[in-house]
Amino acid sequence: IESALVDSDLEIQWLFGEASNGESHKSLQVRRKLGRALPILGTDSAKAPPGWLAKQVQQRSTQRTQQEAVASEVSEPKEIEIPEVGETVRLMSGEHAGESGQVMAVDGEELTLLVGGADVVIASASEVKKDK
Image (cartoon, rainbow, N blue to C red; front, side):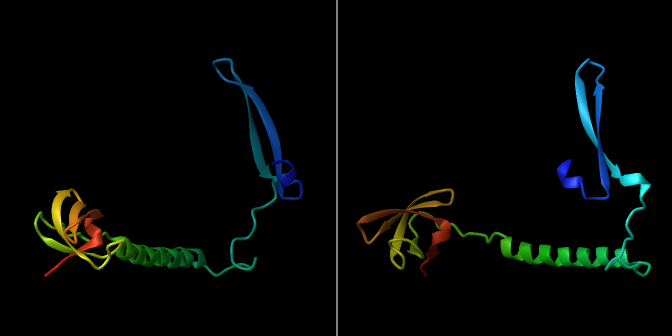
């Protein structure tokens, strides 16, 4: 930290002390050199018109709200229709994609399917679509 602040407008000072329980500690104090004034707030290091900061905060708030709205639309989970035992479903992905199978068992969103009359396949309810 000390070497990083050598050429800055900040100075540092290590403070050493002792806590009430007898343990010693040290802390680093960072402050502006020689009481220099704070830099001028504004854009391009020039004095900005009154209300510029409030305007930027409002713009960022609006942008954040719009981004959150888009994110919630994208990330909203779709309700998955879980088929019942005995129903026929079509696999949408995996080795048996496009094939139909009969639901043999349901455990939450996990389905056990009989595909092609011979293959037993475990699939998620999100990987199948009910045949009509």
